[in-house]
Image (cartoon, rainbow, N blue to C red):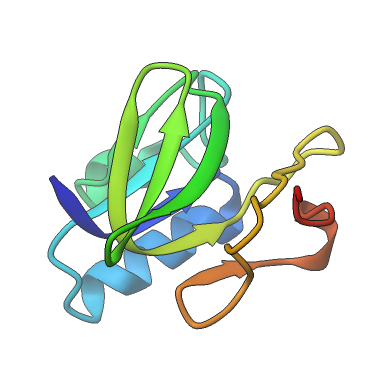
Length: 116
């Protein structure tokens, strides 16, 4: 399934991004959380959020017109990805050819230099 939006991280920022995307008309939004809980668990049920818990992020790449996010348990395709990981250890290295742009959004603390 192609998602309209994948949110990497169930932080307050990640949850608010997912909720606002749904309220703005995104049909398919999924949160991928590396731990077993999100910042505000009661919002998951209230807003019918799709969440994968305990799913580590391995890579982000381009696959045709989609972004492919590989995790420990599988892979997801999406039009857009927001990196909202909120941990000192949360670093996503973007591969060569994938940069933050109108389809991949991230805070500066979340990223390392692209892998070449």
